[in-house]
Each structure stands twice: as C-alpha cells, then as structure tokens.
Figure (tube, helix red, strand yellow):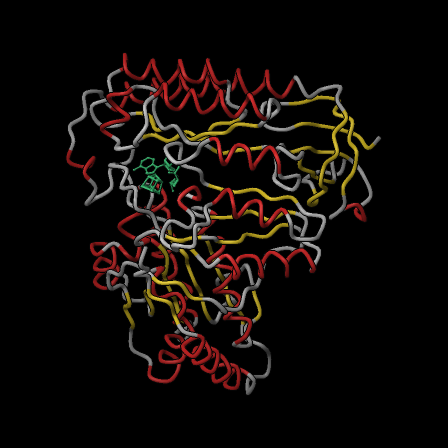
Length: 470
Ligand code: SAM
Ligand code: SF4
C-alpha cells in the first residue's frame, strides 16, 4: 500500500532544535533558569506528548515547577474525549488570568485534542485573551518555533488547522521517571466510533517505522527502563499503512527479542482487530505482560452497531475465550459506556451480562458524553439522566463485587513484582506492580525501587493488594 502520511524531515526537526538553542541563549542571560509548568489531561498519548513538550522546554533552558505562579511558561495539554475534562480545562485556564496579572510576561500555551476542535479554538480566541499560544496535536513538533516567535514578537499564535497527521522523529523527550516509559507506535484513528472525537482531532492512522520503534526500545532497555508501554489508539492496526508486511503481532515479537530486563505492555487494542495471531504472540513472548485492555463499550448488538464498533457481543466473547485458552491467567480490563443515545435499560442489561460472563479484573466506566460533530451527538436519548445514572451505579456495584473477588484470589500467593515507587503512608511506603499490572502496597527499603521483588500477598481491597517481602 502506498503511504500518504507526511513525514517531518530530519532537517525540519533540526530547524526546531535551532529555535530551542535561540530560546536557550535568551534564557541564559537571566539570573536564574526560568521555570515551566506543564499540566496534562486525558490519556497516555497525551502523557507521551507532554514528555516531548518537556523535552523541548528542557532544551530551551527551562526547569520545571508544579506552581503556576512561579512559571514563566505554562503549557496545558488538553483532552476532548468527554465534556467533563473540557470543563475542568476551561475552569483552570480561566483561573490563570490571576497568574498572568501577577506576571504579565508569563506565556500561556494550550495544546492537545481540545484545541483541534474548531469551536473550542474559537472560544479561546474570543473569551480567553490571556492565552498566548494555541496548537493542536498536529503542530506539536513546531512548539519551539511558536515559543520563539511569541518571545521575540509577542502577539498571539493559533495553529489549529485540520490535518490528516504526520510523523515526526527526533523530538527530544524528557521522561517522567526512570522505571516506566511510553513508546508511541502509531498515531490517529480510522475507526470513527460514532460517539468518539478522537479521529477528528488526532487525524488518520499512521504507524512509525519499526526500526525507529525498535531503536527507541533498545535505548530504553540500555538505560535500564523496566516497563515499556506501547501506545496507539488502536495498536492492532499497526503497520497497515506501512506496506511492510509487518503487523502488531510481528512488532511484539521483534520487541521481545530486544536484549534487556523489561516488560512490555500495550494499549489500546480494538476487539475487531485483535485475534489469534496477537494472542499467540502474547503467549509466546516472555517480555509481554499477561494483560490486555480490550474495550467492549456495550453488550448489546444493536447498540454496538449504532456505536460503529465493528463486532458483536458473541464476536467479542469468542475472542476472550480464544485468549484465555492460550493464557489462562491473563488479566483483562475494559472500557464501558453507559447511556449511549437510544440505549434502553433492557439493552444495558446485556452489558451487565458481559461483565458477569467475562469477570474483568478492572473496568473503566464512562457515562456517555455528546461530542459536537460526531454522529451520536445527533441521536436521540430514550433514558433520562437519572435513569442513566442508576444504570451506571448498577454497573459500578457489579464491577466492584467482581474486582474484589478477583483481588481476593491473590491473597496468600507469592508474586514477583516490579517495585515502582513510593507509597502514600509510612506503613506502606512502597508500591509495586504484578506482571498483570495490579497495584501492591508494602513496606520495604527505598533501595528496592526499580527492582523485582517477591511479595507475599497478605490482604486486599477492591483496588489494591497489600503484601510483604518474602
Ligand atoms: N482507542 C481506544 C479504544 O477504542 O478503545 C480508546 C480511546 S478513548 C480516548 C477511551 C475511552 O473513552 C473509550 O474506550 C470510551 O469508552 C470512552 N469514550 C470515548 N468517547 C466517549 C464519549 N463521547 N462519551 C463517553 N465515553 C467516551
Ligand atoms: Fe475513538 Fe473508536 Fe478510535 Fe477508540 S477506536 S479512538 S473509541 S474512534
């Protein structure tokens, strides 16, 4: 297949890094390094994008702060998936008028998916005049140029043109932590689920070249990272646009061959594209964690069709069976939407039935949020807000019951876990993750952080396990 994705050339990235040097030289004349505050909303892809924004900022000579009052530059990386996240962003951006009043030279930047929505960019232009720079995910690679232009000419910049998307290699990355790393393997989405804004704001599916991904994984393994999460809106579509005859399962096998002591996770898998080839690779690859996030969204076939998900309930369940036949101890998580337009309570019962049949280890649950410009936003509701809320509560109650039962099955077992950070209280001062991704609290020496430790699981709650070193 011929590839239509725009590839940002190495020269274009070099030019951006020259802008970094120019801003750096300006910052070097200040008595102390200026501070930048980066706030991220939404999914892991946004976290990964923010690591690139921090990489650029670091190259420009900024240090980082958690206090927006101290910041010379504020970057808010936004999420458009649900209205709730958008309202939080607007509230927090509104509050920045105060920090800007204290420090009129402060530069306020908004980026991410919300900025790629035309009505939202318009709203910021008109009603949030303290915001200096707005750019969508497509223009992230040009961030140094924008910051340079604002610093030298002032004025406001809006870079939110619609774009099918590009791929830019070579942007510096400032990773959060030295144990876990994100690696984007592809960008965008072609699925157009009828409720979802992502394809409109993140462009068409495009895969990074396998050699670039493998080089990044090798570098992370050499640097001692212990957990690598491969990111994409639909990782199972990986490679379709490359025409190299390599798909996601092949990529997993290639990554599994990279030398080093690390575990690979990935998200998100779309059920319509996940199949035996992927499940075989998961079973065969020692470095691939025994866990999969496989969102089913709804359990009723009419609703699934209206959502444009491309699978039926039985199709989904048969894939779960195929996976469990290969990896009986697989940890399964999923996403569910309650209150999709037109969904009746009777149809919602089918969602509960899927929960009872599969018994997911954990579930991410959402009440449907209309997104302007998506087909579902024009569909009529049959349930009231209160009825949707009542269904949502039933879903939570059932999942909590299942989650607790699943957690209890771990009590008394000894598991090799990756110690990944400090806990919140003195008694359980460390946290660790099981290979399947369960959170474990325990007491131990901080020196254990970053290592594998055998933990005896002594008790649990719905959300976490508690253990002690063996
Ligand atoms: N690409 C992934 C997939 O297809 O599973 C997930 C991307 S989306 C950012 C994460 C989850 O948000 C979805 O699985 C869905 O459950 C939820 N979501 C997306 N649009 C939504 C909407 N309009 N209202 C409520 N939940 C939504
Ligand atoms: Fe949204 Fe569907 Fe694409 Fe996931 S697969 S990002 S839910 S359109």
